Length: 139
Image (cartoon, rainbow, N blue to C red):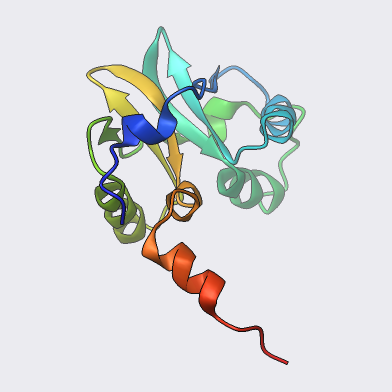
């Protein structure tokens, strides 16, 4: 896995977030518009949670909740695992695999600097991405 820091990977990307008072429907629009799978949830400039596509599928859709009425704070993952911005991609990958999640807020002190996604790791040249490209198609 490349020896790049998370800050290197996230350079130039804006931090995308919402407050807990947003509706899930508005989150879905943002996820679509930004082409991402998760948003950080902030309160008074402090990370309080993360809302992901999986949270929406499991807690809202499968829970038969109305996305127009359900608030982010009701279905977000509170106090998510985080990682330091100077950490390496391999460390983020290990944390996500061990924790069973696909999105990890990246911090510099108390400030959120971005969210690393499991799909970002192969995109920056990990061995798994190269190996996947070399596997011949079946059929």
